[in-house]
Image (tube, rainbow, N blue to C red; front, side, top):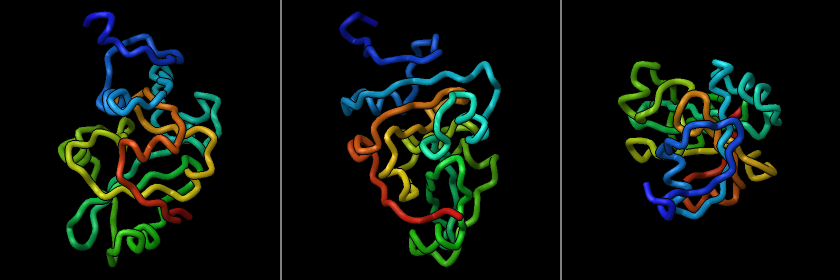
Length: 171
């Protein structure tokens, strides 16, 4: 890679310069972001990740994939401190009900594994709903598309790279 092709971005504990799909998407859109590498910790639960990074768990978001009664798939993104309310989630996408997909279906559907699922760069474009609290975040953290990586950026920049709606989807 030539020097002119390399994107310079702040890195916190990230030693590998291998870009993930979410990083490439943010780069193409000109979104400034910081990569946080917590891979040495072995943690994947959102609350544990927030603690490991020393960040506010209300700003560290987890990505959950569901399937509706209609067989359509949906992505829900919510703070580490919250649990997905399946009834509110279903209502937000006009479904009678939604349920979590089995873990073994995650990678074939999204391209990501459990603990590394990002709302950015999925194999298929899926309707995405983000918890309404995101609009109040000073910083917004989501998976970098790989276990052990989080991307931090301004939530307002997300609309450049992802179609989503905001809704109360948590309990």
